[in-house]
Amino acid sequence: GNSVTQMEGPVTLSEEAFLTINCTYTATGYPSLFWYVQYPGEGLQLLLKATKADDKGSNKGFEATYRKETTSFHLEKGSVQVSDSAVYFCALSPPVGGNQFYFGTGTSLTVIP
Amino acid sequence: DARVTQTPRHKVTEMGQEVTMRCQPILGHNTVFWYRQTMMQGLELLAYFRNRAPLDDSGMPKDRFSAEMPDATLATLKIQPSEPRDSAVYFCASGLTGGNQPQHFGDGTRLSIL
Image 1 (cartoon, rainbow over the protein chains, first blue to last red):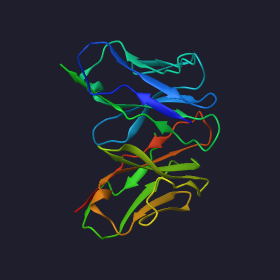
Image 2: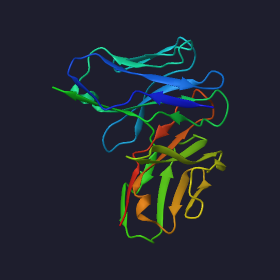
Image 3: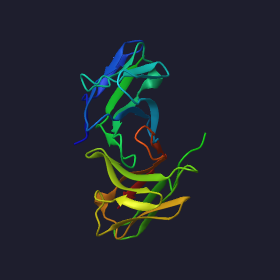
Image 4: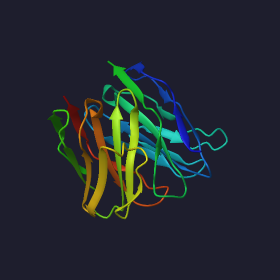
């Protein structure tokens, strides 16, 4: 079956620290992989995506590389800011079907000045 | 940027009342999803549609919940009768068919059942 496992939170970092949020997946075939971010009181927003092995998605200083050999899609940022405080969701979409997503449980990040 | 629009943003009502939540998907999108988010259960898929046809509503309590798409610009989620355990944030998302297409989320309806 299809599933996503995310690093347990919450995560608290100081401003300018390095961020890694781990995400591993189980899937049939070659899924597309996504990271979403949710700020308080808002819906999930697409942060980045990768659609095939070795692809690197990037946006707003965040990066994630689709690693088929380790079935992982870890989110990284070199220097976090207070404004990055949010909940981050990893998700996969199977290669065929109606665009149904499988989401991880979310990782809460708090960045302190 | 095109956005998914959900109404109302907030709803407070008493147990037993009917609740209707509405969603306007992004124009041209042919898939629509309803999710429920709570602290305890996280993000749960309730139902989804492709080309206005329901594909899967197995995540939805059938006895009280119903989801429809009367036309391509409107999706509705109804709860009748509502119960306190239905209190949650309900999100609608839309997208295009295809495994590499993202889902686009609305800002949700925050529902409180007293």
